[in-house]
Length: 591
Image (cartoon, rainbow, N blue to C red; front, side):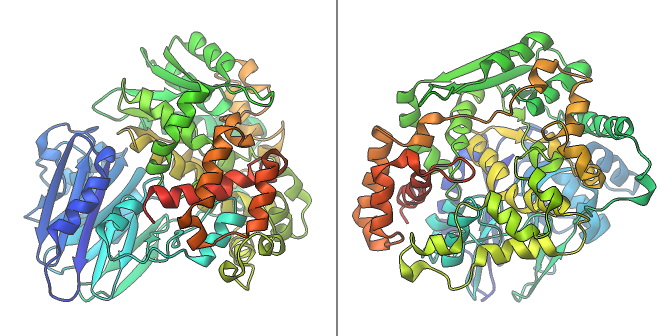
């Protein structure tokens, strides 16, 4: 797990080491264990290293294979690298390191573009061919690892974070009006290739971009699973689905234990993280470290779920760590949380993961986490109403969007409004494309391939990597997701959601964790934005920078200030926190 960056020139000039150093400085938290730079003709690569696999200097990056004429910057982990290495050795390849980075180089030489289809893992890498001058950019199937870029006619730069590109300069930092519409409408999700800044883009998940030495390029999408029923599986009973999911999840959790350092678990006390702990215990894992976080109550809302995480920790004998965050510490942590965000992310979970990761990183370098289960197995409340939908686009927008296009006109300044309802159009393109049998299948596909990438997955990456902590997400094993996509929606949505996954969990964890109201990562102080939180948000939105930007109508802001707790979005978020977070993020990063 690391931070990567680089520059490619198309005008015959040399890339700038000074520019690269500016990008690398911003990536230091992602890789506190080392750094490296490699330059070849028109390309320069930089890398910040977090040592997880092959802790020796033989695995340092950027990694150069002079025999093959290949150089790579890689962020992530290929869980099946030992098997791939054995296959490559049988083909005659010889290795100078024992990690997964070199396996990617050899795999590219052996199998070319199709090599990524063999990788189990999370990855963003950029590979340079010395002889052709070709650059290859690749992102994993779920975008678990980030890859941002900025372009001019003569230059391409890439980095693991958006602020690293901004630090390098020569970036158009004006607000992208379409991205702003998505942020305000699609629950702060800004899908690729856009970001909130006009001059920074991001590679979509499951995408390989090949850039020739002259700057011409092409994209290849290498994974797009069908959300359709397989006739060969039509006779499977719920018990048979359960066994298939259990087997796939066992394998997924096992894969994510590959490391040369200990691996722990972020234990919220919910079904998903509890199931991971239970499966690890079942596999004979002992001395497992688990970690939970909780916050002070606010407006009668409880701020922790320790009763459930304690139950799991006791049942499976883990080395459990509880982190309780008083309100004063929460306020102190917000500037660092904003700094850690590659893009503005409105979820309250961000500060929770930030503080949890800070504590966890004192003990361990790698954790497994339960993100993705709701999107893959149908755990959210907006899926059941879609079972009988005759208009999936409207029905999805009704339950997920923070506001309508017409309402947004009353909130954004006129010069920032798009004429078209671009968020609805984007969602419609995804929901109506072929390959999904039912409205629920279409929504699950949208959420797992779009929403998940730029909300929960990005949140976990940004907040853990702010402290040099690697998070692995077994529910996003692509073989597990391919299996889940074939399961009939009614099997997922029964029993209050995630029915089939709860069937699996009953084989492993106590029923008290399963048969309860769905929990979230509660941070109630931020939901109601009062006291010092209201002052912080009002100060940011009243500042000269915010006034010059002029994103929001003043009468809308005044309405929010007057009664923040009365303006809660359909997904239980604070409308004031949403607009305030955007401005706080922009100011934090000097934009």
